[in-house]
Amino acid sequence: MAIQHVNPDTDIDVILDIIERDAAVVIDNVINKKDLNDIKNELSPYLKNDIEGDNEFTGFQTKRVGALMARSPKCRELALNPTINALSAKFLEPHCDGYQLHFTSAISIGPNETPQILHRDRGVWGGYVPRKIETQFSTVWAITDFTKENGATQVVPGSHKWDKERMPLDEEIENAEMRAGSVFIYTGSVMHGGGANQTSKNRLGVFLHYAPNWLRQEENQYLSCPPSIAKDLKPELRDLMGYSQGGYVLGFFTDPTDTEGKFESVSPKKLFGEDHDQYRIQTSEELVSSSSKKS
Image (tube, rainbow, N blue to C red; front, side, top):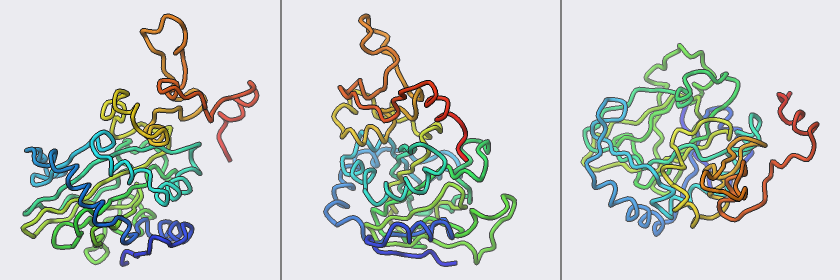
């Protein structure tokens, strides 16, 4: 089953239908050349480091750079892309009150890298979340061209509906080939893995994943982008990273140095001078009702 490609102006419900069917889709030509060059320049100082993986899964010829919200202004823009966020909200919110930025990484697959084992990203939670709950909405932004030869992500469209023991035939595995500036979307339940790079150049992608706001994030955003940096970011990006509450009591904080009670069991938004909290509960009945399992 080939991976379907769509244009940036495709209706989000059409894209969601493809994701429901295949758990994989490519939106072509979203980023312009100037932004691509800016992203490369912002990431270059970190990708120059000797940070290849030390096992077959992370890749002996693969470099991974995190903390993208702290390090790359252009990657912040990608994280807030309106189409991606609209898709993420509609895809994830049947199982949550909101969603959050779960993982950020620039991944550069170098020459002679071998293919990564096929896996499902939802495994990071140890298999404890029921499969009927979709845990992840994932994006891979192509900063260079993605080809089968240079390690374009391998994916098995439709495998999100398979029994977990079923393994794909070779002809069921596709590569997410796309031009630089495009974005590959896949879910946490589909089988996928990095491809083998049989060329002489690196394949670079920016990975930005989203998850329900009640799940533990794979990347600790509060250490990767601490308040001293987050204070200068857009409020909507801070909210997306988790500098907000994920429910009435999820994620509150207390400033241990506060002796006046100004920051006692409050939303992280107050750390940045914001008072609005979308999860403010007015009555005890409302609290009990909102904490009951939705039908």
